[in-house]
Image (cartoon, rainbow, N blue to C red; front, side, top):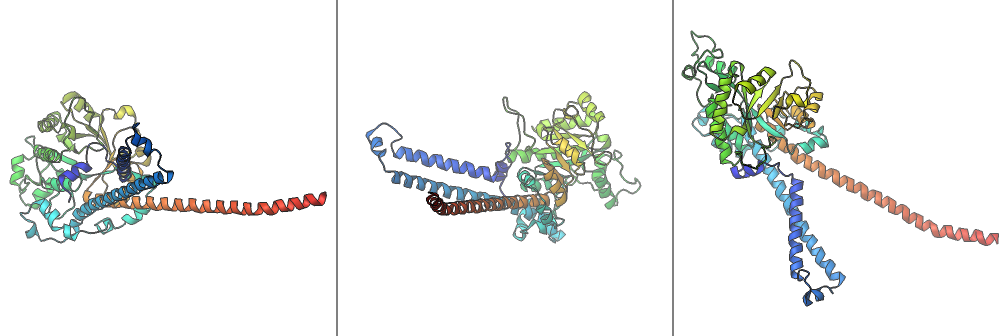
Length: 474
């Protein structure tokens, strides 16, 4: 995996440059440097005797010097392109290596007691798969890539991949656990859609209620109480029943780990006077989905205080699903962070959208199964659109064609491996199309030139014939 500094550069707050843009910048910089050096050698254009003598150089010598500069620029451009290609290949290999760990057979005893990043990044890297089609569930990615339009290819450079419920599909790393987030972060996944339930004593647990119920029942410690329904158990009772604090962390603990990762990698946004607002197309975010009774004023205020305590208020977003929830947040809480408007597809896959209705929200979070017309309208509202849940190449293809900003996945490392692979193949496809267009232009020019030569060859014969006809008439 790349270092945190490398990752920080890839995820800087401004949108990253594409490989073509980096190549152009490198070429322009090289050209300016060489031109400056050439001018200084020739006297910088100052009205001196040396400059006057230099101005008398022959045209052949000037052309030769110009060709030397062009050769150096071409070499610099080639070196820049090769460096960009190697960086993209390294990023793809990292994501594929992390995701392919899910398909490796590991002994449970070997996994116990080892740090998550050592397990994934150390043991699995030598056995990395080279093609994203070999990842579990991604076997048909090649067929979907063949259907990808040139517009979809262009969008692949900017699409983000987020984790649903802290899942990463890597064996040996419990999904949603505190140990999962450093692995996701190092794998290039820095946005997380997390469900939260509330205990009887008002604590927030980062997990879906069904997962907590399954954990307690699997441990056989629910005898005499029945299934742990939402809000009926205290945090201490759940911990005693086997709901441990790493796999099921509190909201406070998760926010602290999230903020620490951002601080260490230089991605924590801090408000500074005169600084522009955060760019939520790039900013790492923790999307909090408070389930059922957990969505109340006291809980929301406690989350806001926890985010403010670690300077992560801009990075913690609150899911809002109904107008009633929006009214509660606006009138009864001190929430100052971003809001994300959720849209489900079960009741209405194509609800009406208007700029006024989405004005209070920073982000839009629809299901990937929403209607095409909904996505067409949503992407015109000027707010980042993050679709859930995207777990297959087909859904990834749809997200790219719909011009979405991010996808939320249960297998984010595998989806990101496919996305990085598609970026490389999109670049190769574009280069091939350019070569084919140049070949067609050359062929057309050759045909045009051949026609002109034939016309020129016919002209003397036509003149001779005309002269002969003229002589006969006389």
